[in-house]
Every structure is written in C-alpha cells, then in structure tokens.
Length: 373
Image (cartoon, rainbow, N blue to C red; front, top):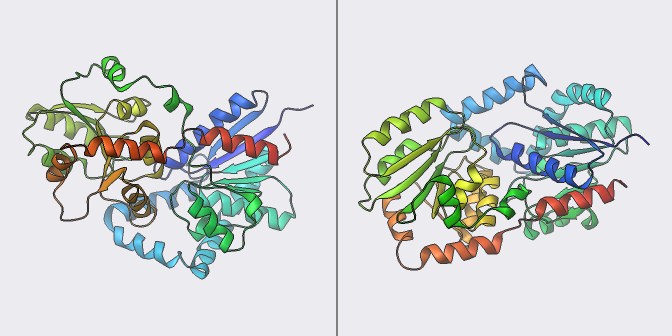
C-alpha cells in the first residue's frame, strides 16, 4: 500500500501560522512515520508570485496604515463582509491549489491559515470532492474568514469559540476545542534555573524577554528606552526576528544601557528564552501567547495589530495571565508594578491554567481518525 500523503497549507504572514503548521507536522511525523508530510507556504514567492505580492502589500499596510487594516477586519467580521472577502481570496488563489493538488495528490489537507482553508473549500465544492480537510485556527477569537463549507474537522482554541460556531449552524461533532498547536519541545524543557545556566544567564536579576514576532515588529526600541527608566538592573533578552536593522539598533543601544542586553535574530531558541524569563513583553500573537501559557510565563502585551491580536490580548488579560498595556500607559511603571508583591506568581499560575500543551497530539489523532488513516 502506498504511503499516505498529507498536505499542510500555511501562510508566512507573521510566524504564528507557520509555527502551528510545524507543530502539526512534527506530531504527524511522530504518529505516522510512514506518511509523506508536505508543508507548503501558500504565500511564499516560490508557491505563487501573486500570493507573495499580496502578502507584501499586507505588510506594507501594517507598517504605514494600521487603521486601514482595522477597517478591513471589521468589515469582514460580519457574515456578508466575511463571505465576500473569503470568496474573493478563494477565487484568486484557486489556480494555485489546483496545481498543488495535481502535483501532490494528497490524501488529506490541513490548513493553518484562512486563505488556503477557503481555497480548498471552494476546490472541494467545484470538484464535488470528499478530500478530507481539517482547519486549525490560530486565534483566540472567531472570525468569518475562517469559516468554510466542506471542512471535516475544525480545531479552535477555546470552548467559547466552539459554542459560537455551533450557534452559527456548524455541526458539533466536527468542532474540537483542543487549543492551539505548539511544539512538543515546550513540554520537555528544563526548569527555569537550568535554562538560565544553559543560556549563561545569572540567577540574581529579573529577566525580561522582548519579542516582536518573526517580523521583528512591536516597538522594541521604544520598549528598551522605557525599561532604561527602571533603576533595578535587569537582564533583557531581545529577539529581533528577521529584522536585521532592528537587531543592529538593539546591539548599539546595549552599549550604553545599565541593563544587560543580549540579542538574537530569527532563532529556534525562543521557547528556551521564554522559559528562562520572569516576564515576556511582546505583541499578542496567538502562538506566542499559547507557548507562554504552556511555560507559565507572565506577559506584558502591547501594540496589537488591530483585529485578531487585539482579541488575543483581551483573552490573556481577562484570564489574569497578562497585563495589556494600552496607549498612553507607561511601560516602565507597568513592569515595576508586575514585579511587586505576588503579581508574578499569580500571573504564572493563571498562565498555566490556560495552557494546552498537548493540543498538537490531540488535534493530529482526531485528524487521522477522521480521515480513516
């Protein structure tokens, strides 16, 4: 019997969708080692020049006109607007999936971004296909762009999201609130003290991790300037992502700082850095939040991209695992307040209460069972 082929479609818009796809692929390989697991970035230049250009326009929009994206997000949040946007993107991207389907002939498709999810849904409808399709949502809120027909199993972060889909008429037996998939590496990390030894970080200072996602966004320069106002010596771990200009600026800033500042570019060490830290200051990407939950790392969230990141920040703050810094609030004062009394310990415990470290394993088992593998 030929080995099963499983096609995972994701999108390199930020790093969260990619990380979710990697976590699913990692678990698929563990549970079904004989299968061929193919992961395709739907927005990569090597996949489609037009898709890649769409992504570039999106990122430029975020850099220069973030409020415009907020308008688009809100317009697509109602059923009519969501269906319109979804159908336009699906039609635009359908030729690419036609090509991928012919090339790979998958036995099952898993999507971790709404663009390929809508596209495969349309393809199934037009071809009257029973190709198993699973959609893994990577946000802490529902949005119509994720919701398609022809999906055999939906995976979401919370039970509230599941109930919301049931209220919209989706079959309950296809909906699974198993959490957002994260790498199994998180479960196997040493304790904080050991991680600090491994990373060459002392045990005598508070450690703060600064991240802006894979794109190196999130006002890290401003954050460093604010943290300089804190007289207590700190260890600041800065992940600049693929933003080399930012990395150089941080390294220049470190020369005159009274804190110890260490810098990384795009790195696979993020989970270790997070586990070694007392506090994470970051934009509220859903995968970052999910990893912090699993590690029990308190968060200070700021500068969410309007739309899903705002909803992520609301979720984490409402459950006591994070403080959401709103415009006009002072970052240095917020950090000092978190470091007082029992706040850090309480946030640590609330983060662990939200953790779903086995999400990948549960999701993959359900997908394989539903597909009859």
